[in-house]
Length: 92
Image (tube, rainbow, N blue to C red; front, side, top):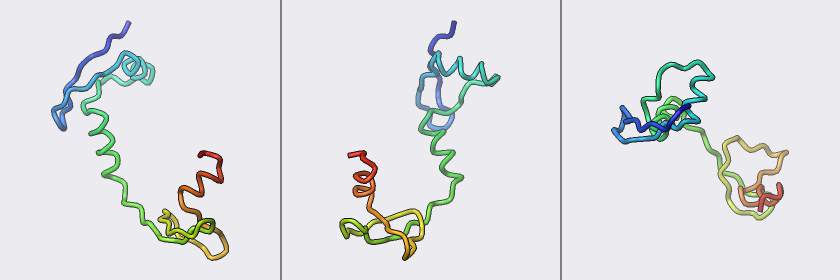
């Protein structure tokens, strides 16, 4: 029923594909307008409204390396670098 359409981003002028699946999703949600921006410009626009996260430095409780975390470390809780945290969760 739907076919992929090539649209032009009003922000950067680049062409992008409005896929049949995206068109179906828009129809299910009741959206009547096609997207006017490519994914990169939509993401940049969303992120522009967000305040920059304040990052804090801490020492990893496992390996001792310096880590940067998006929360204020507390003395009573261990902080791990992203590598040690991933290992603990079994992601590596």
